[in-house]
Image (cartoon, rainbow, N blue to C red):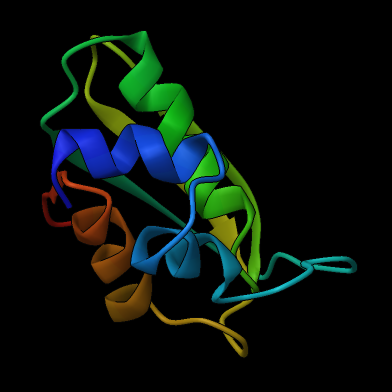
Length: 102
């Protein structure tokens, strides 16, 4: 996702970008039975980290997400029955960042 689309998505813009935020629908009742910490390349400011947190926290199966700039790390707590590591990594990459190995 290009940076402009990333900002548009966070702002609630229309089109295909909005679909990224609606993939999981409401995450009410998300439980956490697993966690992962990834290094993330591509953060250029604190807004990138906060934006990634927002995108991840709106996904079904993700209970928490905490991203750090300038450290370039994201910690994610999730329900492994609802979402897997590959799907989480894809969400990070779809947001325009590169996720290192956990």
